[in-house]
Image (cartoon, rainbow, N blue to C red; front, side, top):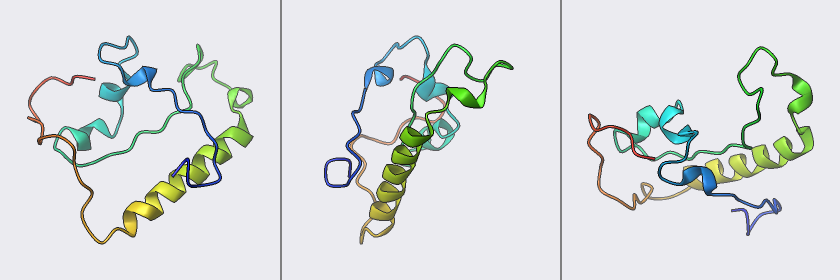
Length: 102
């Protein structure tokens, strides 16, 4: 969707790496779906030192960039919703009781 659409975003997959110190995938809200084999997508614009702290303020938000990300998310959601088949999962269903591995 990023290439086909009007988004032109550059993706950084570094946070997906196994053992990443932020462990953001395992801490995310949608991991509870993924652990049961329900397909998810995870978009983030990254973290900063004040993220989820009392010092986190609106000035940290790049609103123009966030609008581009939101447009991509919308296009992905519409594409998936319009499929005539279930999303193809590229690995076996995980054991929901196993520890999370990023």
